[in-house]
Length: 296
Image (cartoon, helix red, strand yellow):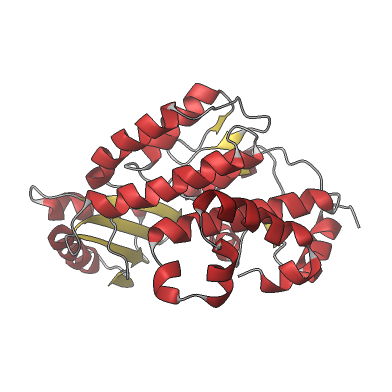
């Protein structure tokens, strides 16, 4: 992850070094060399993804990039957005996402939680299928990623029932995901309470750039609101489709994806092609992004 970028941009390894000193282990080495089983632990994965996003955000400004009108992040990415908005200190965010991963992992015993991707079904039909399948257990739509792409989560038995219910309603695909943590559902409520305690010990500032938050797809700048919604995010659906539509409604035409890969660009293309997304994880990509913003 970001190996090519680091060869050209010192800020990449510098950012990871800051995170490593705080965490007490070499996060950059893990990202480059593994072992995979350690890197795939959510308490490591979450800080790694946060560091990667913040490193690219910093490089954008090193290269002379413009300050954006809005920021948004999908799930964990909301922490990156809050760092970029100067609402949350980078090292505070690193500690929070490490704790977030730990709390999420411990919230549900191994094997008792599940997530599944539902493709080719209307959002309302997925929600209805989950309601039909619950039968006293927890299962709900948790990631509204794009039209026809919704992720569900909850107890393993209820998710299995919901998968069958979605298939019966005509889903093109309904498949379990290789994760054990049922994110963004009611099973995370207890974890969110512990996260709220940790957030109260961290300094939050008003955002200097409005952040479109996951839980309401609204642009927020008030520090108390940002913090409250960050707690709710752990057990509430990620309204990514609505968040992208909110950006388009605000006349946003070009966005920069600060992260490894092109996942968000792919989702946004399915949501609204009027919003062009450019990545910046490699030098050539950054040059194209600068062109897109008229800054070459």
